[in-house]
Image 1 (cartoon, protein in one colour):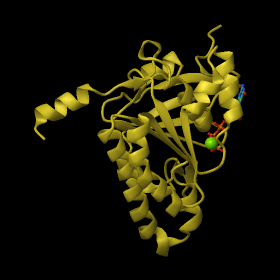
Image 2 (tube, protein in one colour):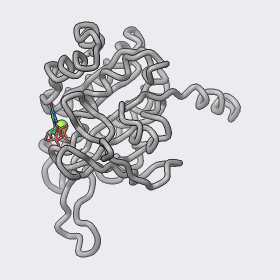
Image 3 (cartoon, protein in one colour):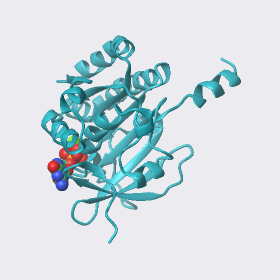
Length: 251
Ligand code: GTP
Ligand code: MG
């Protein structure tokens, strides 16, 4: 394509609200289509909660910050909770049945299965008019199956294929891709932070925006842009409440 065609294509990128204004601002307006956004954090930092919230907001009409589209949710850990979606939808005055109906759920049992689901996703995304693809979490199966140094290069090769297929989906169908990732401790690091996102350079380079979440006081969370082609390295706060993701109430 010409650079002009590329320019026009990029102009068509859309955004999905996270339902926290502060977080949306940090992201330059929300979760972007034609891009892969990665949420990184320890257990309980709210990665899955953000994913479930976005399953709802992505379905809202554009005037309410959504894309009026369906969602493909690839669940590798079995933590997706339709009850939680039901609860948040109700509290937000939405019809939970409609919301749940528009989420295509795929439970994924191992890394080969994960790759297979994404291969099949091309058809589903096109037919079902999916606007958001979520992989929660990206790495868990790969980490569990490819253990030890000898297997690392094979793991990284597979992971590389996987993330690039996801990116291709985002570009081809103008949809947003969200992946979640865990923290891995590196005992060999003598300097700096010994904790780093799992998946190494492959995942780091494939993700368009990398966001790091840590726990704040009570139900608040602090989220930090650690890598992005244009977002400043700033941070924002949000809260996890019964209603899902919200701004922190300022006293
Ligand atoms: P891992 O998948 O284990 O790495 O964690 P995660 O980052 O996906 O965490 P998750 O999104 O599951 O967040 C769990 C946290 O969300 C809990 O510790 C609670 O603090 C919070 N949470 C979940 N449901 C509710 C709720 O109904 N109300 C409130 N206030 N908080 C909730
Ligand atoms: Mg989770």
